[in-house]
Length: 291
Image (cartoon, rainbow, N blue to C red; front, side, top):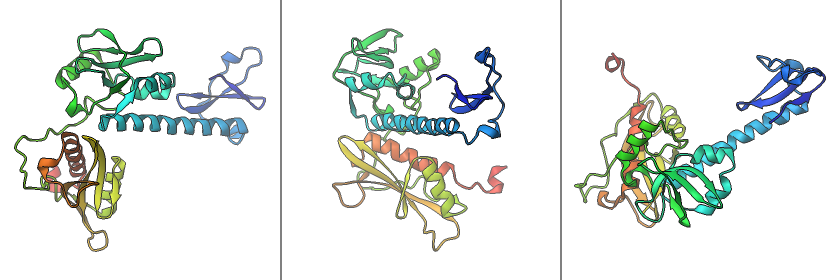
């Protein structure tokens, strides 16, 4: 984006997501020196206000793109190749999609997404370092617990300096134990984490992207074709001065009550444990324990 005149003295532009100004020079505009801060005399000019609004929209758009890709990945949803081709020219979509691991028609068609166009479809770099095409009508961006060869992908990414816009291969995962007790319906491992107040606990939950529903922190994912909600209990804000986390349970829309652990799928299990662990990690640490 170029520089716009803002009065007779200054020009303004978006630089790295913020509005900056420089002194206008009729003889050589490119030589104007950027100001450290936005001059007070142009802060209310229409050109500046519109640029600020545009910058805010770009931030919201980038966040929405990342959230959509995260949803595709967490739920391992099939995504039309044509859709990825259409959104790829948008820089915000590219930032969210670049180097996400996609899987095509078979488990061997896997790689880090590098490009998308109508002629060649998707171009990915596979774990052998080769650039290959994926032309399947749809691809998935699997949750890491479902990714074939996850450790190999992590090693390749580390050696190649790959950084993902949406956390996938380095997302914290919790594989479901083979011997999960089929008669149990809750996890107590992370219960009892103490917070200074209910408001601190709820703020921690929402900052991590989870919702507060009644007396629980909740997060929902699609696992094996159904929506499963993980819930971590919270103490009552009206009867307790401090707050504590409770047990972790899972529910789905077609069942009454908590799911038996044996019926919790691998993605729902991993995401529920991830949520409970993150809430536990944010607890108030007693002074004696912090030494």
